[in-house]
Image (cartoon, rainbow, N blue to C red; front, top):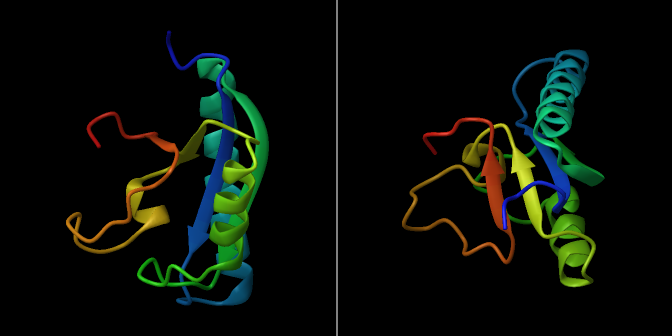
Length: 109
């Protein structure tokens, strides 16, 4: 079975750098790109989660915590991100084993 029709959550994150308005615009741009991609791929977006001003090394982010909790409750099967670095920034050896499938806009990741 392909990924079409799978219940999908969108996750966006920006770190602490820059002015609050610039971060907000970056989050909005990420979300728009992901929503457009999801629409083109026939993915059913059931939620959007965001973290504004958090490092990718910090796993204690409110949006990420809610994302994992909702996945554990059966809300969706996969998470769509611009790149894996939005979920976790660091060594791939240290990246958590996510309980959901991670799908990125970059096909080579």
